[in-house]
Image (cartoon, rainbow, N blue to C red):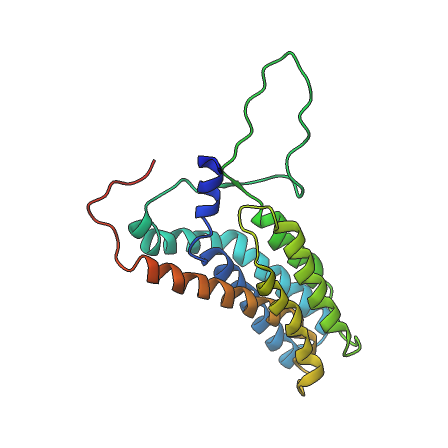
Length: 222
């Protein structure tokens, strides 16, 4: 049975808002890069600027928007739980070693979303893929999907296998559809952003169906 700390960390993702807000930040950065490519030279410089701005929007503005949304949507319905802290490690906690000195218990109300999702996506998308062959986007999307599934499989916010399968298959758009040349370099960024928004939105819809009315008489959780 999961401890209170692990349940509190999982509760942060029960409404799908963290994924949706991050996805919206990626879509905004994609729109910025599209405008840059239409009206400014040096497309690669525009890619770095747009992707960097998107991640800046998420870390410094999106988190504030997320807190505001949760205070209006989530906490009135199912109660307040202290938001989890971001872990400083990509892969779990260090191994326990024998020691005579007492050591504090590790915090369990922590999330790896920043390391295992945000930074992983940034790693794959930070490079502009101009001039890549058409088969490259399907391979890239499959790699992103497999990495997200593997790293988050035992985390506080695991991705379902069918959801990451959908993400991996989105890369086939570059093979099956006649994508305008202006949008081809933006496909990975836009596809990941749409997937995150779709997954977060679907989770939010299910959450609102299960909790249609805010709780008024019940106390707030500690």
